[in-house]
Length: 314
Image (cartoon, rainbow, N blue to C red; front, side, top):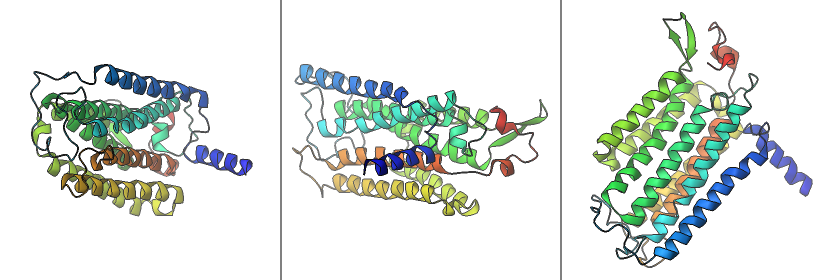
């Protein structure tokens, strides 16, 4: 039985291209996760009945429409909705350090764009950490400032995945000044960062219940189109991770609706629909990320007659 489990573990590491990584390097993000989590819990216990947010303007829109009771005289206004954001911290650290390890162990033999261009993993990881920070502080305080960070964090994660999806369609661009092809991630990632700044500067105030679903629809549509035209339907590991991400995402959305409409509602309970939404969204993000790591490309056909720019990691 142990041998079977070991073989499955080795197979999983191989298909997501983690077999070249030193597993000891992942002790550091686990330690970070543990220290941050324990530090927050200790701080909460020490300052539980202190109103840390006095004087800060309260959040607007749907801030008071969550089912969980609001404890405005305490350090954490919505405990369940706050602590459930630790899932984003875990996923963010995982993606970030996977990207860092990818950068340390680059190889021209790997037929995967996410692995060969680690900046996308790092971007996704940092976006998840930003979402963790914003959503954690937002539900802890229900203040306007952290509501902005929460919403812009959602957009940051969505845009980071959209950046990679666009990169899949156009992995190279022609540089006129140097008269040769270069990787298009030099252009796509800065544009995404600029969009994030625009959201932070004011676009976040656009109705998030309208704009955010539109972005998700664009991501979903582009992914479906790419899968159908590039034969990814035949890659079973990719399909499994992608389907898991979608199924978990749909369940998460149902939990969000049930909480929002007070259908699943016990204000005093630690089991809140919105908290489950956080945990399931973090899980869905993780599986979506893994689905992009297991897909395999015909590198030679993608970069045919383009001076093999890909193999130079430019």
